[in-house]
Length: 73
Image (cartoon, rainbow, N blue to C red; front, side, top):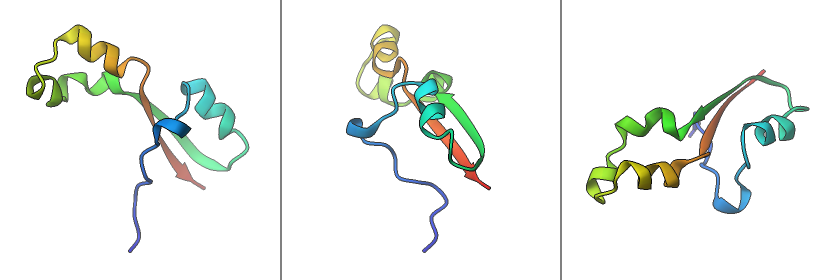
């Protein structure tokens, strides 16, 4: 089976921030590194309602969290 996405990162090997992503991957021949912050999808999250979280609590949980989408040459 061919997967089109990679496994999500674990806490022990997460990138610190966008600069860390780019530094680690600078020598790898990727076609594109696209970075998205979790805050971009905040309004689409179902968990805040499910767990009765207010905006400040959600902001603290996702602050700085990001996902990197890469494509290989």
